[in-house]
Image 1 (cartoon, protein in one colour):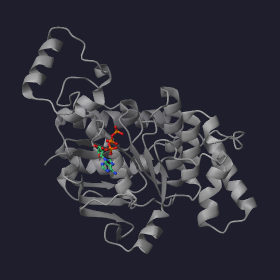
Image 2 (cartoon, helix red, strand yellow):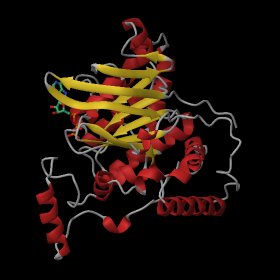
Image 3 (cartoon, helix red, strand yellow):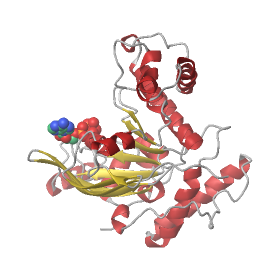
Length: 365
Ligand SMILES: Nc1ncnc2c1ncn2[C@@H]1O[C@H](COP(=O)(O)OP(=O)(O)OP(=O)(O)O)[C@@H](O)[C@H]1O
């Protein structure tokens, strides 16, 4: 089945400062077209700044961001305006207009950027409100609904122009774990349906381990790693390991920087039986969320597996074994669910995009 693939976002050597404060430097990564990626990192590492840079709301002083053949740091404001139409963005608080009801909020981009009739607009708005589970709430004002509903309304609005790239800033902030999972499911379903390229910024471990195809990690002003979930979830890189397990043991401290003495002290406490926090017992490759039954097969999974198979031999042996085992389990689950065998065996799939240009993306600097 030929499915349109979303747009790749290629970031190279990106550096951003505010005055003398360096936020991050030399960030290089490619968001593979049509896949879901997540950018993680402790609070304050500049994840939101990165997201805003991708749509040209903030201007990094060095590097390039190439979207659909255009470097948005070099292009004219007219070209940037066109590129922005490819995006749908969900900001942390939903960024709704407080004086407009949900219907008008969601209809806003259609009225602003298209010449569609009000009856066409109604169809699209109701469709998106249904997708995020807000049918019946169209007349409510943002101030009258919960944070989770505001977030879902923000998502509906981000989707009305059929974006090819969807940016989501902390979908979980202010939401309980169940609502967070519903939002995650919606994002996975949208990816299955329209193959959009999605970037989620978050520090939610659960989301990071179960939702994205690719994971990136910002720490101490650097992109520590960026690559397929299988690679990050089996990584021995201390920052990645600590973050994905949410423990106190590792380089990340309360105030981000931690010295050797502090690390040794904490390790000694844990060796003596103190609980380091976190969820260590579920290390490794946990199953990824799947599209809701009845949705199209998520094409991103096959493309990602193909890419990982190409670099498998470069990974530690234990990681290779864990990855192959996880693929076998996924395949078995699919067969059990009635999906035809061979779903991942697309060695000759011409849709696979050679995305990665250097080893840095896998943290092998
Ligand atoms: N417009 C701005 N002007 C000056 N400094 C800014 C601006 N926007 C962000 N910063 C600074 O950049 C740093 C990174 O902020 P950012 O919000 O991107 O972090 P984050 O990783 O998203 O954090 P969190 O997970 O807590 O939301 C912070 O020190 C912040 O104060």
